[in-house]
Image 1 (cartoon, one colour):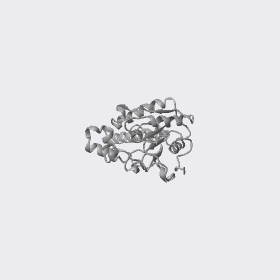
Image 2: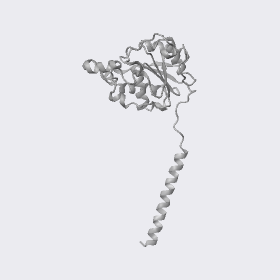
Image 3: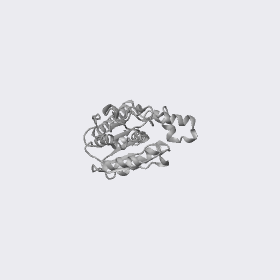
Length: 251
């Protein structure tokens, strides 16, 4: 082939590549932005139990949510709520996927270890594009000394979730901090928490922080009372309502 013909084919090939690239760029520019749940589209509320899977307190909180006209479901965790937290996040995702078949979004309320499960779900199951709001109640986001003591002193009595909730665990280290937004986040906790120690382990970077005793000095709220305390219930109801999440008001 003559040098002239080789040059002609090279020019034609370059034009073809540039045309294809231009089409690709134009297609990207035409692509719709990834959608996230609209803040005015109230959906299903999912409540995630803490370590051990007990639901008595969350059942009462779910009833209070239903009284506002919302659909609320307490999600039953596998292995009695003591197994691998990633498996619990998988369970939450199945519940969320089912809820999204009939609702525009989900709001998630995680009590104690359930708040860590909610973070795992958002991070591993594209919760950013499914959840509208996430509320955590007394959740050991930085770990709990009780879990560390169990993992060190009684390993046979410290199941997977217990070990994963120890400060510095591999699982906790893998969680994003600050949390991705959207969704909007609220972390509610009590300085009188004797289960999650230190109590401010419940602080969550990227979330609105609600230290109960800062807003309501002297109010006696233990870890176990977080899902049933009237003031906390009011904070939760407001947080999943139509208005943006705001700082906790005085009691």
